Length: 356
Ligand SMILES: [Ca+2]
Ligand SMILES: [Ca+2]
Image (tube, rainbow, N blue to C red):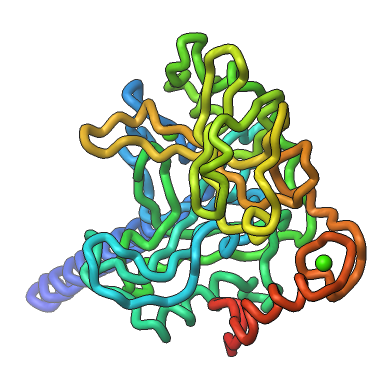
């Protein structure tokens, strides 16, 4: 009898231990799972920096974050998504990048980047052309409705991230492994682009033309980084540099200058460089110098497209004329339009055409 009792006690003890172990195991697993859950953050939290401009979010950041905001650009106006698997140091082949701006009190924004040839940089593998097209076909569309995203949509992005050139970017950490994929979902289509923050070069540069850097991100380049701004009352000092994928310089006439990176929008090809005193609408970017690294510098303005209006360098998104064959937008359909049509005859846009 006593032996049985002892045996029972031992068994009970074992069961208790087993139970404890099971619960401990389940607890560890759920904590681990919780730790892996994407964490919703504001753009401002995500972009926080130390006094020297390095990321402070990176110090204890989660594996993945969730960010919401307004999509500021159509990616093909900024980087060329056409696949190109050429092996060469740092050559990324097809690229895809969008900027999401925070809303309300979330005065910040975030770039989300994808590249094809990670192996030409720090990655271990690159995408084949086919894999790359699958990736950007997926990212260009809302996974729930297949709606093709456009600048001005309210979206949600979930993904891993890396700090580069003075900004925290959503990206795949240069990995082709699907575990590193990021996703973009539609919250509301056609909300409209945010009204640009109206500034002058005095908001970005000191009187001696050095860059304003505020580690609290409440003024200067950091405050406007990855946001839509309108820089008023400037002129272009080097119109000879006008063209797609080129950099021009704007000046305020009081000794301040600022670089403007012209993107790939077709209007930058079609229309001449605007002259005289103009306003410029674009997205403030930071591409800080790498060697030696200085994350307090390297601010620039990205202009995605130009609609030829003559007074504001930017795209008002309101094309006049309403003539379907007026390719160059000069209110008449003639051989000049046919020439442009012939020039791009049968070309198609990777990631948008022939996706499924
Ligand atoms: Ca920065
Ligand atoms: Ca025309």
